[in-house]
Every structure is written in C-alpha cells, then in structure tokens.
Length: 55
Image (cartoon, rainbow, N blue to C red; front, side):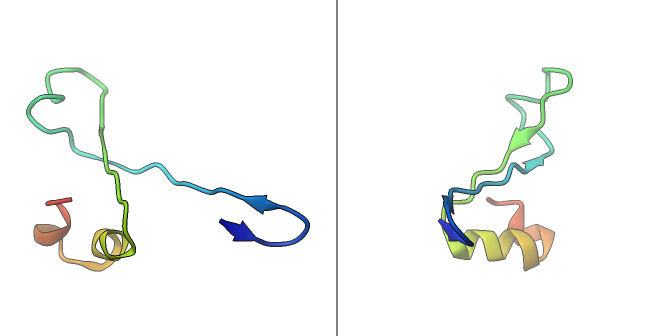
C-alpha cells in the first residue's frame, strides 16, 4: 500500500521475460514474472541474469 495524500492505493507492475518451452510455441506470448517478496524483487533488479532468470 502507498499512503501519499488523501487516499491509499494498491500498486503493481507487470514484467515479462522470454517464454519458457511451454509458452514459446504461442506467437506473441511473453512469460510473466511473478515476484512475491522483496528479496525476489531485489534479485530481479540487481542480480546477474544467471541468478535472476531462475525467478
């Protein structure tokens, strides 16, 4: 939740990555990345790709 002024707002973002083998045959369908912890978000944003891609 973000408390910034007169209201509270739930915010989210949408990220995608290259599709896995199951999704790849479907043209134009990126693979969603679902991050549920601060640690996962930090890994996605700051870790080397070899580590972040495991998410």
